[in-house]
Length: 275
Picture 1 (tube, rainbow, N blue to C red):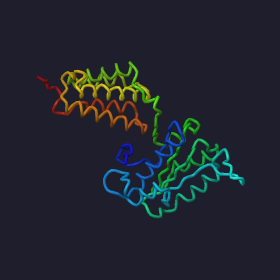
Picture 2 (cartoon, rainbow, N blue to C red):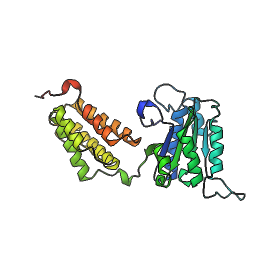
Picture 3 (cartoon, one colour):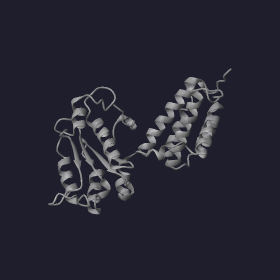
């Protein structure tokens, strides 16, 4: 069972906006997050084996509710999710869960909410009940109001084409970071991170992907690692994965660079030389 992203504090936000190239991919990710929200197993969530996880997988959990575009009297799906649907959802949201600790509302094709529905959803997202998680699925998230998007943690899934190897600029940036880390000079590492903290989130994600690629090459001994030990390379790889997780939930790029500066090397290894 795949694990969900590591959110700040180890908990799911009260609302997530899930963006993916296809509706099916959005719904699949939403099911995984819904399982994590109601999971009653031990350790990492979702466990995939507890009663709650199995009910979500089967589509029969009473505390996981899906909201979709309504159908007309001929069974044809209408164009928009309506304000009346969101109002009904709001009324139901204040009711305590049936079985789990939380209720999950999955809004399929969230970008199909009409303007009135989005404004009603905004009020709900601003003051959500404590026991509720909202999962908004959208292939075209930019069609949602900016105020709606800003109140959700972003979970973005990329297509195979978008996952291609990082460009040369990203590789060069990653090499620059590793060069700074290799100096073991804390001040130099901080200066490098501060000088590059103006990257946009997309460029930051590409940089982190390129960084993992270089670290993998060093771990496989296909590239020289300079003064960095194998354990330090592994720590940097894990650090880059953590940073990518934070970036996916809208953590500020400046904060991510702060983490890359502070945790670049274990405290005991700063300033040490390698024979």
